[in-house]
Each structure stands twice: as structure tokens, then as C-alpha cells.
Image (cartoon, rainbow, N blue to C red; front, side):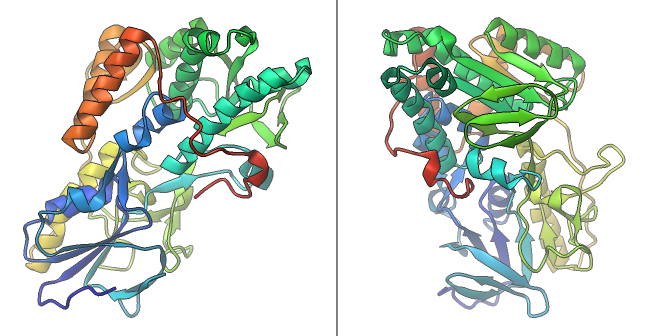
Length: 431
């Protein structure tokens, strides 16, 4: 890997997501050597992936080079690598570009789509966890409308314009809202010779409410917003299979759809060597203690989505969201320095800053600790928070300008099929 030898403690971070970047920043000017490994050379702002999928933003608006984020930090090294395993006996990480010894290891690999063992759904559905997946979904949506123009088969045309979103969490709700706005304001202009009114957007939710982790008030209001946009919500329905054409459920309900987006859950993206039953808990996440240490190790840590820190308030682990990951990364930086200096560690305490979701133009729901609100003000709060947490001044400006333009013109101009995508080539849908 050509990492220089050093007298400083070497801290290896696997993963350049919210947690890994927050930790690297915290350690930036300390007397340690930091090596960050990731299979991509950029950090992705995942909360806005749905806007890439629906043509609202280009991918470079929500992605930022890892090297540029940390370019001014001394003793920092980045390597583009896929980590194959962790050798806990020899304190080594094994990658596709070589092996590297560590003094301290932090696993911040995040999460991946959870298909709950259904290989057919995994093969034929679309995921939206990475930039390439979002671009694939954008291409497929646009290609479906192009194909709908060419067919005289009404049944096939309807299937091409039907979109089934499995999962009523923030990802599913935000994607459904964006698709509904495209149907209402953009498709009639782009396809005047196609009856786009027959396009249908469905959310299939296995429980009795959407936005399950938010308040009943937010869930109810979001459902109201979606229904006014023409989205059909099916609650207490579980998708059991999808063969690329027909969606079957645990009820008599079926859908004929060329596009199924799987947003029904995620699981920890664990690494071989730390994936044995002794380390793993619910959601395929690595068990950690109050200091984010992996069970049985003082010098190996896990943070972010891949880590399961169980507390009285969160008996199933902290929420798999950006805020817990950022806070864990920042606090772990302090704890590693304390460990190096032989000082007692401080337990991690998550400060819940609330949750939010947008359903479209002037429509959002926000749950804060002491109050809740919905509608236009919530929408402005949602935009401000997301702009604030984007990395890079250029990205913030580009996204802001795009949002203003889209709002004024009621348009999404990134409706480009740059990389054509065909489901028949989609052997496994995750990258």
C-alpha cells in the first residue's frame, strides 16, 4: 500500500461515510497516523440519493472526493481498496491491494440493502444505496417512459408506467413524493403524446403506518400529503416476490410493474473476521459497548450503521441514520486519544436532534425533541438542514441553485439517460 512507517500510532478507518469522515476530521491534527480505506474515492450524501434517481440533482452535487475533504490534514492517507477481511490475531486488514497493520482499527462500513434472503427480489428489484444504483434507477425510469411510447399493448404500457416502492420509511416516502411531482408537472410536457395520467405510484408498507420511526402526527400528515399527490399507499401488506414483471404479496393484491424499488430495510455491511456470531446482533450489526469497542477488543471499534450500540432508550441499537454516525465518529476521536494517553474512556451518549422527511414541494414533516411541525415551514427546515450537512461549498451552492430553479420552473433538468440500464443485465443489484 506504500503507507510510510511511523512512530505515531496508526489508526485504520474502513469506510468513508458519515462516521468515518467525522472520525478522520476529529483526528486530523493529532499525533497519529490515519489511514482511510474505501472502495469509492468519494463520500456520498445518501439522504439526497433519491433526488439523483428522479433527475433533481446530478450525482456530483451530493458526492465529494475523500482526498479533498482531508487534503490539508498531516499524517493522513487514503487508499482506494476493497477490504476483504480483518485479521484480529495479527492486527492486519487484508485488502485487494495488499495488507496493512494497525494499532487501532475502526469499522465504519455503513449498511447495505437487506432483501431478507429473497434472491428473486434482489435479482429483479432496484436498490438506492449508492450513486451508481441511483443512476441506474434514473435511467430505468426514463427508459420505461420511452418504451411506453413505442408499445401499442395497453397492458405493457401500464406496467412500464407503474412504480412500486417497497418500504414506507423516509427513503420510500421521499422517492414516492418526487415521482408524483414528476408525473404531475414534468411528464405531460416531456411526453405530450403519452397518457401519463395512467402512471401509478404505489408504496407497499408491511406495518400499519408509514414513517414508522416518527410520530403518529408526522406519519398521518405524510400519508395525507402523498395521497393528495396521487400516491397509493398499501399498509399491512408484505411483498413476497417479484419476477421482474409481477409483484406478489401476502394478500390477494398483485401489481404489474416493470419497476420495483426496494426500500424495505438495510443491514450492517460487516467484514469477514468480525462477522462471526459472537460479534453480530440484530440487523447484521456488530455489537459494541458504550465506548464503541467491539466485544473482546480494546483497540477495535465499530461506529455508524454497522455498529449496534444498545441502550435503554434504543434496545435494538441506535438508529441507522447520519446523526448517530457523525456523533459516534466525533466522540470516538476523543476516546482513541484518551486510550493512547492511558486515560479513562468516556461513554457515548447520543443526542437525538430529531428526524424529518420531505414529501415534495412545500411538503415536509419534522419531529424535534420538544415540538413537531409539518408543511411549508418544515420543508424550509428540511432544506436548510440538508444544505448545512452537505460537504463542500460548491456542492451546497449547486444544490441550492438547483432547488431554487426547480421550485421556480417546476422542473428537473437532469433527466438524462447517461448510462443506459436494462434489468436483464442486472444479475445482482448491489454494488
